[in-house]
Length: 289
Ligand code: 3HC
Image (cartoon, rainbow, N blue to C red; front, top):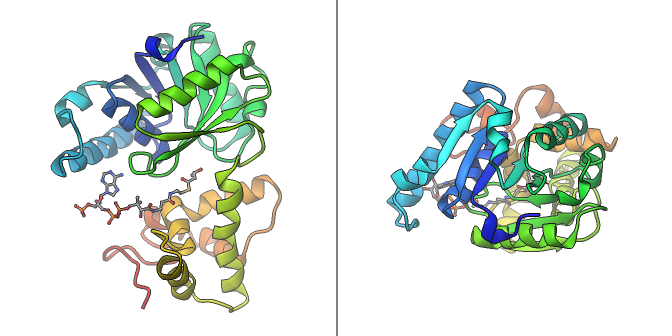
């Protein structure tokens, strides 16, 4: 399997908020990047956000290369074979659907070299389940970034049941080369370490809203002002998307608070739809009062 010194090309499958962010940090670190999605429109949206972010970081003097140099390292495509045939590491960042991710892993395996590391950015599924149908599951692992990847330091490097040491080590060193702080997760459990802690925190706010213990503003204010968190749980739900949390809970057949379910049904999914726990149409949305 490839070692870090052999990694030149990183392919990211899925140009959504995680995918384009992972592509961005890889290009900033100097890798050649291929960003692939299934429709031109999705790839273009992802690329536009990546471009916006790179230019923003450059304005603030936070990059050593120019935006032009970084953007020149990013290629976009909808062609899966072209995207993965020259890749040293493939990172899948598709929606959280086990069947879909399994299919993607099998398709990648059909086109990629046997030396290519195939990683998933899944946030809630087991790596071993996603890799269950590939011929070489030893080269599959989790590389779980956090939103937004360009600002969040942590990366979970997850061992599937069949992941070999050399693969996990290269994935770990790769995350370090992006200037991230990786941790190994050796037990392949749904939601790994971070989301097993973070999701109940985000969900608990919803239960307290349901029974009237707290308001959106009061629960967020406690975490921001008392704990020093950058966002309270309601704002963080809006940031990531209420539909994402609801989908994860539904997937594991767990109940979710009405305050979250009702908003999802009303298409109030958070920042991306202009409203969630807060309204974003006229500005940042958050006022803890
Ligand atoms: N790229 C470039 N610039 C960006 C940016 C991005 N992606 N996002 C924000 N900025 C810019 C803003 O435009 C702003 O620029 P300006 O000063 O010119 O207006 C500047 O950065 C400052 O932005 P903010 O005031 O919004 O605040 P910070 O930069 O201090 O922090 C944050 C933003 C990092 C998002 C912070 O609010 C935070 O850490 N929030 C919590 C995020 C978190 O917990 N993420 C994990 C979620 S769970 C997860 O990801 C699990 C997974 O499985 C889904």
